[in-house]
Image 1 (cartoon, rainbow, N blue to C red):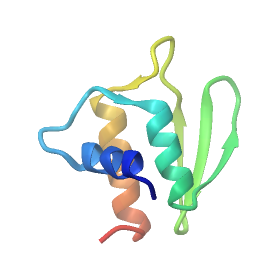
Image 2: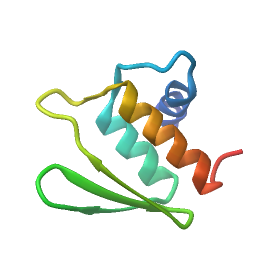
Image 3: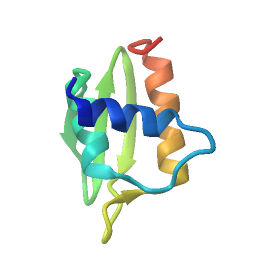
Image 4: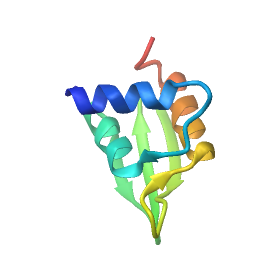
Length: 84
């Protein structure tokens, strides 16, 4: 994991939950952690990591993940067991 991905990880776990995390940086972090990603219909993205699955809709037209999406990714990462 590079410095940018570590900063993204910190931003995801920051409290209060941030609503300004760029989605492409979250995708980059998930790839660095070893997640398998497959494209779904429309803006759907299926993510598999550590025996867990998550389906998200990529944010558009702006590429910023809102609070709800950041919280979803946080829960997903905690459930995977990849992180402490």
